[in-house]
Length: 194
Ligand SMILES: [Zn+2]
Image (cartoon, rainbow, N blue to C red; front, top):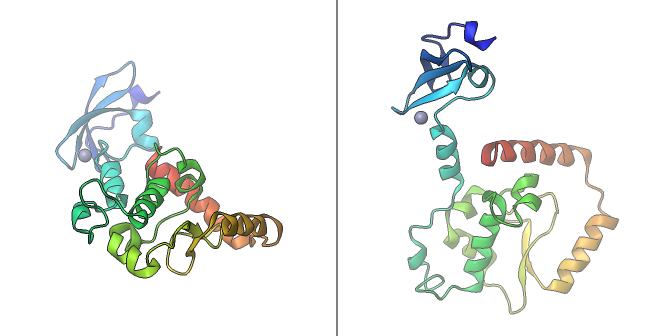
C-alpha cells in the first residue's frame, strides 16, 4: 500500500514530500511552498491534499468581504448603529460565504454567489440598490440567480411570497441554468467546506 511508494521529492500542488515519518500509516513529512511543514498520508497526497491548508485559507480570504472600512460607510455602520441596508448587505454575504451561517445551505451551499462588486464593497451595493423602503428586504428575482445588479430588488414580505410562488409554479428553471447552479454548488461546497 502507500508505505511502499517512494514519494521523496515529489510535488503535490504546493507540497513536496521530504521523508516518510510513519511507514505503517504511510505518512509523509512535506514542505509547503508557504514555509510550513506538515505530515500528510500518501493516500491524501495522491488524491486531494495540495497544500498545508494555506491554499484554502487564501481562497476563503478572497471570498470574505472587505470589512476594514466598515466604520466609514457614511454612517451606515458606525458605532453599533447599523443601517438596514448594511445589515442586508452583511447577511447576504454571510448566507453565501460562511458555512457556519444557519442559512448557508440554502445559498452558498447551493452555489448562489454575491457578485465581486457587491462582495467587495458595501458602498457599491448601496449605490446600485439604494436605500430599502420601510418594510422591504432584499429579494432575488430569479431563484437560481446570484446576488448581483439586475437580479435583486427591495421587496415586501408579500411581494416575496408571491415571487416565491411564481418561482415554484410558473417559471421552470431551464436545464442549463440548473446544471450550472449544481456545478457551482459543488464547487462552493468544496471550496468552503471540504
Ligand atoms: Zn502552506
